[in-house]
Image 1: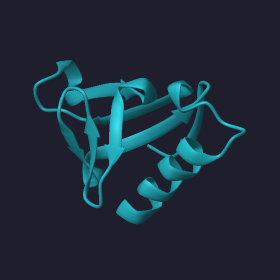
Image 2 (image 1 turned 180 degrees about the vertical axis):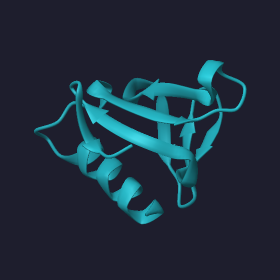
Image 3 (image 1 turned 90 degrees about the horizontal axis):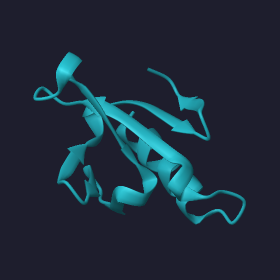
Length: 77
């Protein structure tokens, strides 16, 4: 599953038809209300082998619940 998430994000990030700023990634964050938080593509710095590196820190792929592009879910919750 981790490789699928990374594959989806890389496809959107590098394909010329997509705008990575329109990506929204929902993930488990125990410190947030409801234990969920999200990050926009514009806040993603890099897609490492085991985590997404953001301006706020690292999100392990196994914590990612959903990926949306332009409001449409492309990776299920």
